[in-house]
Image (cartoon, rainbow over all chains, first blue to last red; front, side, top):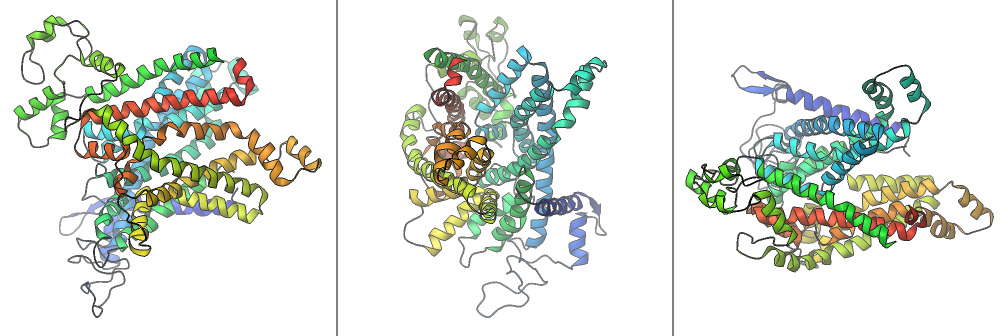
Length: 291
Length: 326
């Protein structure tokens, strides 16, 4: 559908988010003994970003006449939030949470989905029936409710969100891999591998798995985008990521109150949803376009 | 035909049992006191033990074996009365029995959950049904349109679809709140179905357009389309009588599959716009940590999914006679 150009741009966007996320994951001890990430360091030392007292307007350098907001100590491209933190920095820090969620969930879901899909498709028969029964069962449980219940039973926070979503989101992958394996196992090169005496495990891993990479790539992109969107929903309900850490979901959930103020605090919401989430999810979805 | 339907229904019994077992494990695998602690963070032990007893977490897990009557249960008491009960006096089988007899229990405020669900299905339906019909027609029309249109229009519509899919639902809600609360102040936002329907349509249309477009474009170069064109059929005639009919199975799947879910509504939409439907019930249960309600909603969702599966298969048999013979 889309040219190679758009796909290339999407990959570059994702790479940028990935780099920012990694920069925020690496931490060091600064001269005052506080732990900072590399990203904080770049902002504090490179751009001289200071903490304000509370909200300041985007691009606010001096106090405008009749303005409700104070003049900031430093320059903030996108203003500051209620605690005086730079919104641009917060938005960039959100990509760390997105990175952890996307990779964490897929790290749990992919081995389960790939393994069950390969086994069901290759062996067929009773094993196939059992695995199909299993994933139909998991698919029947309402997804959002399962995650909510899981979080209520086991506790809140990032780790449990990743586990809950990871344990439920392998179904689609298993289904797709099973279908593909069913097709591939009839092909000549599988028969030749069998005749040459390769073990079943090696046929699955070395012959069939490499032929499902496009499915895996597409599923990875789609499930990453779903997880990042799900985090905003869960946080909006109030059972997602806990306040205090930085995520786009928290910024959007807080915007619920901020947008009702007079004057409305729109920049927090704007940068989280349109500068943080939108480009990343758009890029992930465009990669997942098949043709 | 009836045989086919009956077999389809029998096939869902193991799945239903599987759903019940997984849900049961989710609710019961963890130490009861720990679950109580998650829900009553700073409560002292006796309060936690009362919570455990109130939620029946002190009963045996799978089977009521003789030693259960002698030991101290998680609620801090010995229950000699277990010895008089049958071996199936356990959380697993009691729960299963209650589910089969549709005894979903009472919620925190001592209201009947089944009654609540009946009352709340209609408000959810009043939002989801118009939204469903509108988005079905708009997305079918647009995706049929992309087949006839020029390449750049096709690309534009597809990009629009992907774009709307890339915006999180809370963002749509807050934008709707701003648009209908600040810009256009014709209707009140709270408790009014109109804004909720619009958000549901805009938020759900992207995925549908993209799916229908892919399905329809697969048929575009089929030989029967070429033949019809050679006979001089008009483009819209080919679209509706040839392409749409041949692509009807995947489209039917998504349509029939989403029918049962029209009554469960959407949690965020109903909470944000103050509509007293099933989604709002779910939200209130999450906020007040009402376990029986959540459990009942999980079962309801699973039941509707299985119902959707059966309906889909039956509709296949109606559309495609080959399936009936299998």
